[in-house]
Every structure is written in C-alpha cells, then in structure tokens.
Image (tube, rainbow, N blue to C red; front, side):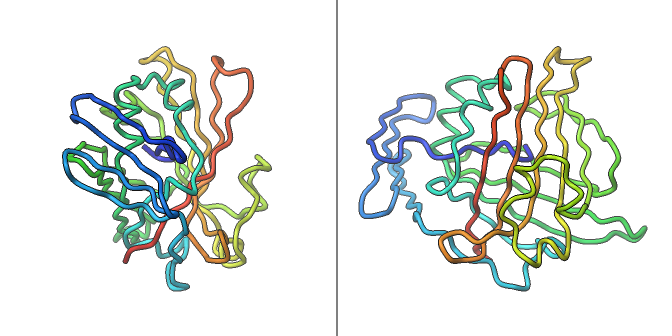
Length: 234
C-alpha cells in the first residue's frame, strides 16, 4: 500500500525467524545485509543507487527497490494499522521492488500503475493511481477498505512541514505526487491516515527516489514520521 512499506529489521544483529516462510536468517557484514530465505540469499547494499536525471516525478516509469538499510522502520505504523506480528516480520525480511508505469491516458489524465514484487513469493497488492485529486475506494487484501486521494502539487503548497523537506530542485520544479490514504472508517472502525509524498532527494551524495509520510491515528499520541529510500534498477 502507498507509503506503508517496511523499513529495516535488525540491522546490526542476526535475526532468526521460523514461520510459514520456514527458517529465515538475516546477517549484516561488511556494509551488506544478507537475507537467507529457504536457502535463497538476498543481498541489500547500504548505499543508495542513483536515479538517472531522466527519471523525474513526471516520468517515474522503471523499477525501484526499497533500500531497507537506509529507510526508517515502519513496523510501528503497520502494527497500528492492525497488521499481525507474523505478517510484519515476513514483510520486513523480504525485499520489495516497485515496477512503475507512468503515463497519461487518452483523456489526458495522469496515471501510475504500480506492480509490487516481494521476494520469497509473498503476494503484494498492486496500486493503480489516478492522479486527479479525487477520492477513490478500494478493498486492499492487507489493509482492508481504503479511501485514496492522489494528486500532483508543488512542494510549497504542502501543509505538513516534514513533507516539504529535502527535495531536489527538479522535484520543486516538477511538483510532487502527494497522496492521502485513509482507512475507510465506516467499514473498518479504524481512523488511521497516511499523508505521503513522492519525489527525489540527495542521499549519501546521490540522487534517489524517496517517499516521506506522516502517519496519524487516535491510538498514537503523536504523529509518526517516516522516510523511505529506493534504489533505481532500470
């Protein structure tokens, strides 16, 4: 779901988990986090992989892999959204890749189709965003009924200071993708909301795709702020 990917799990320790995934080991060494799932080894570099200048908020088509070693953990927000410990543990260990197709349809409406791929064969929901500043409703198989409102806006038009920070000059020029995702309270009884912004930032000296979001719910006394960074693959 938009803005709710997991952060790193146990960066400096060895993590042993036995679940429906079988035995899972995560080991950090020499700047690489290595994850073994049923005999499959996945390496996650700590340093971000730069996006080319041709990839902007107006042209996001390509593959982006969440860099968990650089990103904040979102375990607490997932917990507050009602996601089980078993599911949170599984998602936090597996790698996530986004395949984006960014285009304008025949009616002139901006759209982003997102295929989410998790290693280990775990299913992740796809997102098909219509960037039109209108509410849409959907049933998500992890988060349940949702209300989603995506739009394009300028950084200086954002009302949450945290979401304005750290963006590149081209992101300021082109605008950000800003989305408000809420649990459909009438159906779920939950009141959480995520305000998420997509854009580009400089991380460790390289230009990378990033998401920032603010998570709120009556079950948390303070908002939770999260930064997510992605490696560009193609």
